[in-house]
Length: 313
Image (tube, rainbow, N blue to C red; front, top):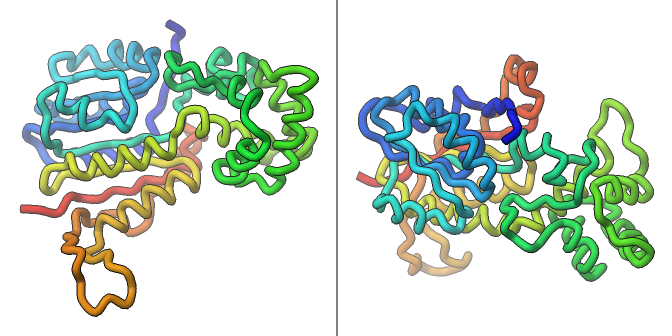
């Protein structure tokens, strides 16, 4: 296993919200990665137990190594957000005190060219978070209909020239199938323009869109957050760290919906939905990294943290 250094983002703020008190706590780290946030939780509260979940088998190996100091308080499981309730049940947990979603991709995934997530490092066009899956980025981009490519670039990458990009990809793949990240970078720069030093590289949003599509990230996130709310014990807390507007919008909307006491259609003479508020939002605006943290870890610059607490006695 290659040696990677991973710095968890917004660590101080996240741990403050998820471990507000001493005593026994059950915490789910739904994206355990290398175990950065989990290690801080286990160090701060010596009675806390953590269920660390990840789709990536390599990440779980790193987490197991990094969390050996608390091996009797850590449970690791391979799975997706949509498996949250089942994986909690597997360790006998029917409710928990805190759940963390640290979304997006981790530094080790980006920095390993074999994973195909990086537009700066040439490697196979893979992008699978779970390498047991058969759906790679190259398979998707070489076989998806033009309309589907356009939709993915428009909805997941918010790319203005999504139609033009999809059309060009279909033309290029007829001559030669896409196999490497450099192939994709080349066509992106042909259509969207060359990258300018000091600005976000031109292919960034294209890579983001493909990664989301290949891994079904937004659907998984929505299912996972809704299940997480149900799993929380009264006064349990749900923390979400997002890295782009699509993720943050989903978290914001799900949080807001869970605070409502009525979802009846407008114009109803009286409430018939019998809905009760489930959450209280603790962060009126998402928390962002300080300048000091960004200097140490530039990948924290676009991170946003939202936290809510389960209502109940």
